[in-house]
Length: 351
Ligand SMILES: Nc1ncnc2c1ncn2[C@@H]1O[C@H](COP(=O)(O)OP(=O)(O)OP(=O)(O)O)[C@@H](O)[C@H]1O
Ligand SMILES: [Mg+2]
Image (tube, rainbow, N blue to C red; front, side, top):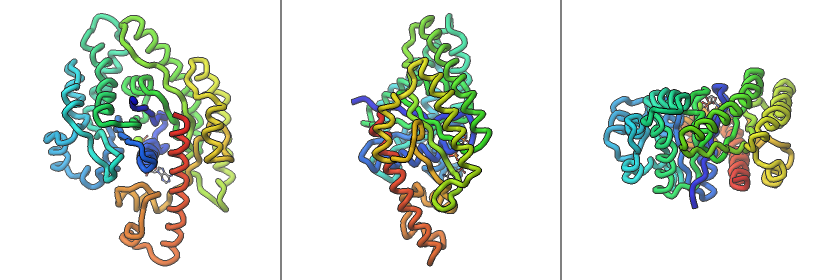
């Protein structure tokens, strides 16, 4: 069976796209799925989360890219920009294993921004420049080949916070997408402009397909939004955050979903309800999950190279947590474990 691709996208920065892709990757892998985390952001945060301190070591990173023990974006980008396909890399390279038999990383690199400029130009100039057309053709097919050769069930694509050509192509080639949100005004603003942008991209790609005869899926299905990082008081989001959460939910349903339905890019509401209600009975469409603030656990998680919900006794002791503070953390870890396993199951149900 071929792999399923899911983008984590919101052009608003800092809404937890990378962290959520990482956590869901771990959750799906714990549910027995083979997952490839794809770092498509030149900031390389996802790569940094996986490699931790090693990503800060210039010598390590130079040999990580150069030695080619694992396939990374750096050579892929070079080949694709030169107008070649990267089939040999896809065929011969294995992807980096993330301390877990089912989870892998396709590491990002800085030169992804060069690919981004090329793709942006290619999508605007639809005739007469064959090399640009080849860039478009080779980009996603390379990812699909890598997935196939490594028996991947899910490709999780972490996008940068921008509306560039690379994000346009990655989104429009993917099967599904999830929109992480934060409970604030800027995010609400972003949801309004995001649906306009996706409609525009859809039309642009349709036009591009017609003139070039290049195959692009152009039908990413919206799976839902993830409400992120509200402060809990007595187990419910505080009033001021609840207001933004409600407003964002309404905008997603009344504006975003309505517009995307016109181009057939939303998962059916009944299907959504059936998939989500068994795991999260209190959520209404299109909320996939509500994720509270990780507080101190996020700092421990980044040091331990593990998601917050898999931190163990040793991780807490190494972080100098003892007594009641440790007990509080242990309880939170259990809650987060349950939350992310359910979220993983919801995604499996929906896809
Ligand atoms: N639930 C959470 N609780 C606490 N901190 C969080 C949570 N989710 C994410 N963070 C933190 O918020 C910051 C932004 O998260 P992240 O980098 O995942 O967002 P992003 O949307 O990928 O950002 P960018 O737009 O720059 O790519 C990071 O410091 C991350 O550790
Ligand atoms: Mg990010």
